[in-house]
Length: 281
Image 1: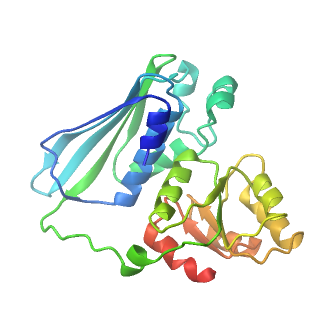
Image 2: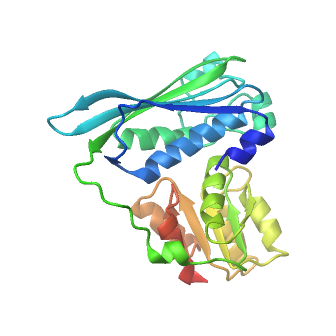
Image 3: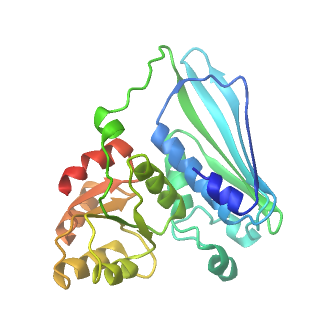
């Protein structure tokens, strides 16, 4: 998923998995994948030389209740995080200083989402960093021991459905989520158009048509709610627009639908659910 960007920047990528970690555990692969995508994506984004190292180990094993506490580390040799930002790096809307933000792009909600997902899996996350010496993110999670191994069976729909010849627009500022969505669609013969904010979406949709639009709610420049209002009331756009949000609640869902979105999807985006949304077009 990240090989092209790693090769493009000439970085080294290494990983180490403790041999004591079992091959199969019971947990939420989508949450774990989203955490890794965000952290590795940030590591690549803020590293111009050297490389990225990912490792995994066991903290403890509860044989009686059949639980593992695992520890994961993503280490880079990038620009590092200023000391005065370390304490707030996981807070909503926290960004690096303006110079780094202009050069690399802000971290946005990525680390907030990561912290939320880690805590939902019974773990915690921390960071150790020095400016110009790189950063090391460490997180833990608690997973169940797999008593019976079953081969994962992909949905026939998700495995065989092709989106070839469809035009899809993805409006999402988080680079990690862009990578994930692009990766999912590539498995179904489609290369989506990806842009960063609602203003770009409005400008593009004034002159170009798409079969489906996936739009994040929280974005810089223009958020999803402002954009959908313009698309529906000024452009009279009939194209299905699906909202993407990391903070799903009954109130948020109703707000999305009342604002003019055709439907909503929780982040991290689930491949099978994304395919199920396809009847919209």
